[in-house]
Image (cartoon, rainbow, N blue to C red; front, side, top):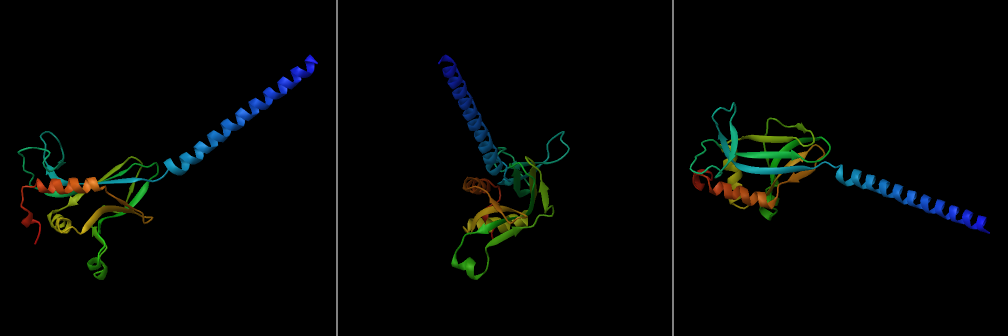
Length: 193
């Protein structure tokens, strides 16, 4: 009788251990699938800034400074910086930078859905956690971009990868861009014809 009870206890404990092992392996398998599907994706973050390049003492190259970040300092070479960060875990090839217009009948009949900003460095492969800065957007492009922004036609800026996916900047970034533009030394009429 005691021997049967001991065999029964051994058999139940083996079943319990095997069930715990099965549950642990299912949890590990589920976690790996979720991690591969969700976390192992490509992801680009676009940040658009208005400012200029300034020369810093004892530094070999010029650096980009946002408008209004240095008090009582005028920035002679105003431009727009498009900063693209690959925050995913896979390399991404970007092919275009531009702005999407707000949808209305005017844009529909003129067949004008997007404005492309020419970048000589594109297409460019961006490795994971690499930053690509396009800062060669000079005054003529700045005029064209801000003319459309002030008129309220631009919905958002985007960077497009070679698979056709558009990654856009945030609404907060658009408001910050207009605030930086307001801090400009040049009046608005210098940008709009």
